[in-house]
Length: 148
Picture 1: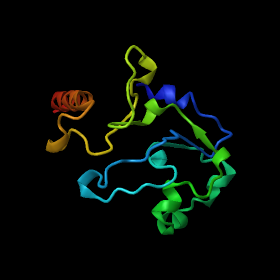
Picture 2: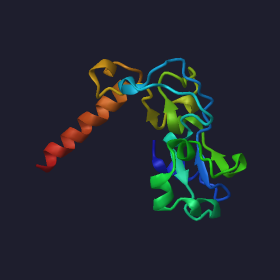
Picture 3: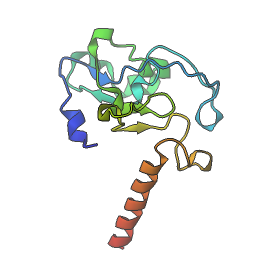
């Protein structure tokens, strides 16, 4: 989708905006065999609109970002719940978790998050929405050839 539609959702009252996934994975491993963990605000940080002018984000200096834990950053531990705005799930559609509702175009993904692995891996070449990614790859390769 056009990212301008996402930008139009920005609300400066919030320090960050993201999809408030209610996500508790059933798998014990994730992409590349890494151990899967369940924690608060799981996958919220996988697509974030940061309000760089918000006073609460001033804490995010290069030193803090380089030295804090992944949990601190991924769970937005410097923020209260009411400082985290929400955007529709279609802007961080979790393949294998979120679902398109038949005859409801508002549920079709606008940004796809291949949670287990994407079609660039042989094992996931036929995953849900692989065709969209592969079509984009093909278009990019055509454009690249045209520029040579």
